[in-house]
Length: 530
Image (cartoon, rainbow, N blue to C red; front, side, top):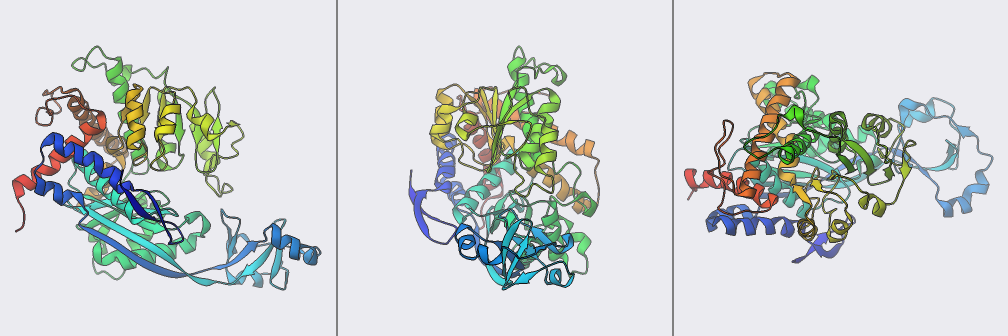
């Protein structure tokens, strides 16, 4: 594997494994299988555009808790400092323990200050005046041969250009697999959003879109939520993009994943998790049927033996868990950035979601959930279950983790959760895989439906959205299964004859083969601009 320079959060450089090199290795091997034209390969090897820019905002005044060393130095001097009561509407308690506040906090009374120190909520804090802060921002536009660039905006403290290149190219494959007229892009900001107040996030988001606007638009590049962002932030993007425009209603499709009250789509929030559920359901249907030509009805699929472990309880993980549990599967363990929990009798996904998304849970973590046992991450990976759903960040299932897993199926809810070494071990161990570029394609498919509704100034029911999503996911997943098994056939719903490649291949290769053949068709039939 090629070693490259990777940016760290503080701007320094280290030598490590390239996300993009790993992503493109599968592309190159599939191109060889297909005999893809070299010029088409060159068009797809690198993104069309890689944007890096910076934004600045003034962050709010803060109360910073004293660490052990500072407490040892100053604590005794302020032991008699009166406890202050902070008005809820004027401050935000952040995940790192810092309190962001508005200046009017001190004008309301009830706050005692001495030498820049405040005692509140049982801790001693020092005042940190507001100050400007700079953030590094990215947008990668990989390919638009099939339609406008499309991909999420991620707010995370460990992002890099290399990561966004990988995610952008995967969006090109994902939109092709979903057979929707969009291309691939990705971007975001290097930030831990949990450490900023809601109004700071609004100003950061508005400034980001202000700088990005010349490069995006409803027919150019369409943003959507990703890790660390949500419908609220999409609303900020939408307002900033359309601000001052004479016909803002014609620009509703500049971002997707909006709240339904501002022309988002019904079903969009749960779409990625729902798409994963449809894939697992179809995998079980094939497993429980006499043959691919004689599949049982979906209603007869049995979930009684399906226990699963889940990594990541954000948008994808939480919605997938709700749907899996409703179908009859049993969630036995959950792992996230801050905690890992286990209950062999089963974890109630709805109850866990209420705990994680409670306002008092600043980290939005499963850590401390009182109805399950705390375990280590290694114990999590070694938990006996039917299925593992990685729905957090990428690169989780490396060779070490792949050897620990005790499951029959891995359904990839995250982007790129399995490394090439990890996937090879899963294959050697006979553990089946539903690859991410179909398993988590539900989000971008329903984003397309939102974009379509915005363009037509229409609004669909959730039932219509889910019905169309189910058909899109299951149709294309069945084509992937036919490619994998070298099973060319024509059914009333689809024709896989034009995509099978004359030999059996692993599921991810089959998915890549489908994506590349659909992209290739545009270059072959449209030609190139000379």
